[in-house]
Each structure stands twice: as structure tokens, then as C-alpha cells.
Image 1 (tube, rainbow, N blue to C red):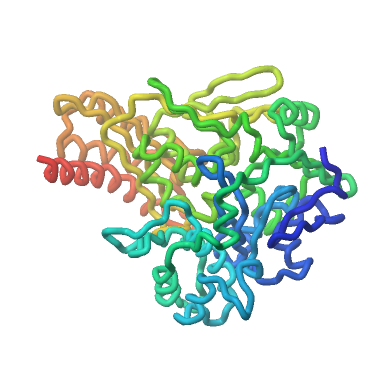
Image 2: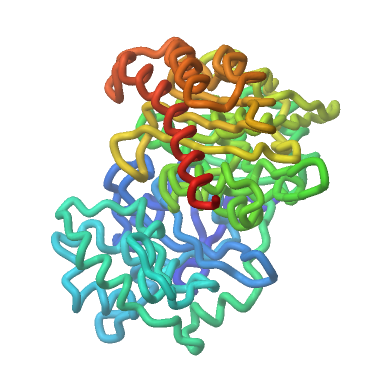
Length: 482
């Protein structure tokens, strides 16, 4: 593995040695230390996007996809051997990049603090390979095919969103002669073995699964990380430090996605963005979830294994996976085992996973339920933490509910199944009367509390409403297709 003095990152086309820095040093802080101060620290937890930069990631073929991420969350060692483009690398004062030009001429920059982050997120969408004119533009997609979700993780404190949107919608296709466009036709950088040390602490990226499992077996206190969207917050805001961090995000054994006749297997180190593209609509419940999961900046880093590994009771993914009857495949140096997600969580941020184990994949059995929905109740439509999250999956045959699976988040110390509600539905007619009775049961599920996001009474009301809404939406869909 590469030692600390060999760790280097290509920034704006120039290879830069990382130098002697602590392993917890973020990409943002390192960039600013070497004089690239366009990226800013606004929130230090991945919510504002002022720190956005572009990194070269594998696309769904043999090329490269420019991907925007929060540089305030990821350690600089994670980009060893990788390529980064900052706002400074897009254009110059005398030769603005098309994104910078449109932001300038349309008044998209006010105080300017957030502007470099907006520019990088916008540029990643500008270079998206499948972006094309939209025949039917809507609230979230412009006539040029620009998806406004690309900016869902960027906040403007001067409330200048309208001119920023105008700038995004004014962008034409990426010029084929643009060096960053040409770069997308070539393979992305391969993951390199990394061993970055500083004193008694180390950041290690193995290139194979067995090496990673051996490290965890030998060092039970090691912290495994992937996208670092959770651990990065602990480091930045709570001062968390680890003697050994083991990076899993580029392990090929954890980055596989398979669809068979009886199951969908999703590699734990695939980002949520990659999962969404890879599934391509095969799991409608997840398609409904992903746009509501944090922001695209976070989804470009957050992994399905990392989300389950943190064990947060307010994570958006577990309720949906519980509704899908998902299983977690755990692996260690001693072997592999499979655990139903409904039995995976054991307490607040605790699970059955041992320190020497990793989540290898998540398995969703097929066929899927016919009626599914994901409801997230939060104070903002996007880029927010849920007060309540509900995943629903029902099979209705001949007017009778044959099977019901309902996953809940935000109403207990762990994500839970609404088992009493499931029992109140199964075997009964799929009617308004049945649903109203089951909704009264559902409002009693879990042990909701009062906190800064919502009161217990509000959470109970939202549980009840979720089931009523599912029935109403299904009835409306049936009416439209009749």
C-alpha cells in the first residue's frame, strides 16, 4: 500500500502530494490549505453545498462521470490517486466556463459565498452524459434537460434561487472539444491502495475484501467508512477521531448489483445514485425514496451499506427496505451470514453486526408487492431529515389484502415494522373501512417522542395519515387506468 509520502490527488489537472496531514483532514480543508479557497465551509455537515467539488467517478460503462460531492465530509486520503475539479479549475476571469458565464450574466451570484459550490454542482449536471432537451419541461426539469435535483444540496442564503435556476436552464449541450467533456470518454481513475499515517493514526484503503476483513479482525476498534456522509459529520462537528479508518468505498466485491428471477442483490459500497441508475426503475419503491433522500450531493457519496451500518432510527432507507422484506448479507474473515433486516437492528444505533463484520450486500426478494409507497414527513421537501418516514408494500388479490409490509422510521429507537397494522390489514378486504380501522392501529405503533423536529402527537397523526393516503392514491390511480 502507498505510504503517506506517496498519497497524491490530481487537482484541476495537476498532481498534488497530500503531504503530512492527519488522516481526518477533509478534502475541503486540504484544498483551502493549498490555496484553492473557492470551496467554502458553510455547515460542515453536508447540508449547504458551499463546499461542492467535482470528482471523476466511473460511469455505467467504460467512461467517466463528473460527480459533485461535499468536500467537507470526505477525508483527503479517500481521493488518493483520484481527480478533482474545483471552481477554480472550470474557468478563468478571462475565459469563463459556460456555467460561470450564465451565473454571472443572469445575476445568479449575490453575496457569492455559495456560488463556487453552486457552480460545481451545476457543472456536474452540465456534463451529465444523458442530459438532453426535455420535450415536456416541468417544475424540476428545464427545457435543456437540466435536473434541478442536481442543486438540491446547495443552499443560497440570499434567496437567489430564481436567477440560479435561470442560469441552469440557459445552459446548452456540453462542447465536445471541452477538455472535461473529452475526459468523460476515458476510464475513471482506478482505486489505489492507500496507507496514510500521522502519528499513531492511519487511514487505510485496501484494494480487496479479504484485506479489509483481516484489518477489522485484527483491529476491532477500527472504523469502516464508505461515503463518509455520517462519519464525516462526527469528525467535523463532534471532533471524533479514530486510530484506524478502513475505507470500503472502492472495494469491487462490495460494488456489484445483480438482478435474478428471485432477488435483487445490491452491493453495500454502491452509492445511492449508482443504485438508482443501476436498478433503472426495477424497484419503484426505491425510485420514490431516492429523490427524497437528503440531496444529490449526499446520494453521490452515501452508500446503502453505510446507511444501514449507522443504525440511525431516522434514516430514510430502512423503512423502505423493511417494507420490501430486505435481508442484510454480513461477511467476516470467518464466513458469511444473512439476517432479515427486521431482525438486524437491536437498539439505538446498534445492530447484530459484529465489529469484525461488514455488510456485503442488501437482498430484496422478488416478486415485488403490487402497491408500494414511501412517505417522508419533513419541514422541507428535499435535503432534510425526516420527522417520520413510512415505507408501505401491499399485495391485494381479488379485493383482499393478502400480504402487508410496513416499515417505520422516526417513531422508535430503531427502524421498526408496523406489525400490528400489518395484522389489521392482512386477510381483510381492501376497502376504506378496513383502511380506516388499520390507520387507527398504525397511529399507536412505536414509541414516538417530542423533539425539535416534531411532537409525539404529530408523529402519531402522520402515521395514521400515511395509510389513508396510500389508499386514496391507489384509488385515484385505479380510477385513472379504468
